[in-house]
Image (cartoon, rainbow, N blue to C red; front, side, top):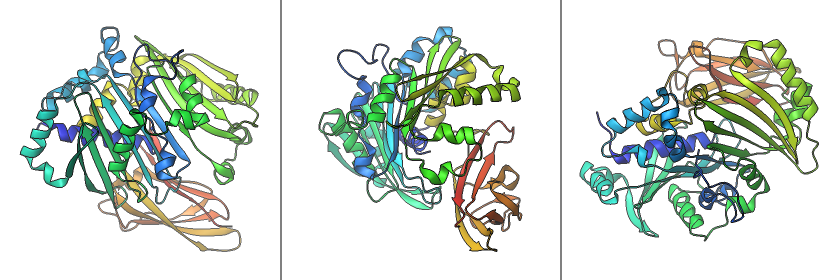
Length: 445
């Protein structure tokens, strides 16, 4: 079964937006920071706080064109998904894409996150073919239509199974860009996200790079990389206090933003993680080195994949740099052409965390302990054996109201948690290689 261009636009845009609210764009080969100013992709990045009013926000970039230019020297496996997508999506040649840039934000409320953002795909698009296909397939009835600054505009609403709410969704098309926007917040519609991204690129909206010290620093530090992403946030004492390891807590103290970047050089790649601290915070380089040494001694097998691991510090920054095998980087990051193709075809994998939301209700058990009831509120059905409760859990029941062993909407589990402690619902992939927190809450004192 082939997919329409519209299906591709929705799937790729929504996947990138989801990545931001749990953040890919790209740089041209010579699009690093220079005398003429910041990289060109920053022209699309508005500040999500201006629309959503959130402190947790970020961006991501992916240089598709640069990667494809290295195709002959790169492992062949990551391109198999690209070829499959080219075959399955009607009249869309993914190799014509040059860049993807995303920006968005969300709240830190694990039970009911509000999130939104935008993605722009740059390349070459046949606008007439796309609009004709939408009309002929009957999909145009799902949207209101119009135009904006030379773009064909489609906007409307869709059900969000993940949160049990309605999402606002929009996309705009011209011959050189497709701009996709989405939101589950009343503060911003999908149309707002699309039009604001276009306005920002036209110079009519304040750019994230110019309005945020953290965004400027992350972009500058990652200048010239193949792919990068960055998020700024306020962890607050609530999250830091849940961490038992004093050294880890110290590394997180004063942390205001974090980012990741990779530079692909054929069969090897340089992977970087950057922590950015508040102005008055001390950069804990020695503590980070001690943690790295502890990890290397306790789990030496985990370091066998790295050719080199190093830590360095700069002005308000702490950087971890590793040299890795490119194929391994692509397989585990999901940011290579395979990831783009998977998004385009909306395909998943056994190592992809399911999308589901969980609610918590707390009651007093005694003066030192609280009883929590965790309920699956909506989204994907998940085998119960793939879920565990982690944190300050003193005891727990089994999942009830399941369906053939799967945790579904309405399934519940009870647990005893230390007063002031934390409980998290954690999913683990069948092969044990991937885990993700799907929900969490702190017990009242």
